[in-house]
Amino acid sequence: MRDNIGIWLDLNKALIIDNENKKIETLSSNIEQYNLHGGAKGKTPYATQDATSESKLLERRKQQTKRFFDLITKKILTANKVVVFGPAETKIQYQKHIQQDMALKKKLIGVETVGNKLTENQLKAWVQDYFTKKL
Image (cartoon, rainbow, N blue to C red):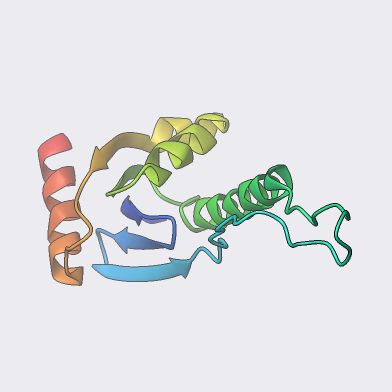
C-alpha cells in the first residue's frame, strides 16, 4: 500500500508522484485534439456539405477522457491520501470523476492549481511539502 500520492494532471498527460518512493510515473492521455473547420464542399453545385458533427467529436472526447481518468484511478487505488494539482481545468473534471466513488472520495484531500513549468524534482518537492503541511 502506498501512502501519499500526488497527481499532476493536464489534458495531455498525468504524472503520478509517489511521495514515499519519490518516483514519478507518466501516463499519456491519448485524447484527440479537435479543430472544427466546417464541412467539405459537395461535388455538385447544389449538393449539401459534408459537415463534421461537433456533437460526435465532443462525445468521442468525453469517452477518451473517461478512459484516461479510469486509468489514473487504477494506479491510485492503493493510496491512503491523494492530492490532484496542475495548470488546467482537467483536475476539476478528475475531481468530479473521483466524487462518484465513495472510497476514493475519502482519499482525496486537495485539488490545487500549480503551473506547468515545474521540473520533476520540483514536482516531487511540491508533493512532499503539501503532505508535510497538510498532515
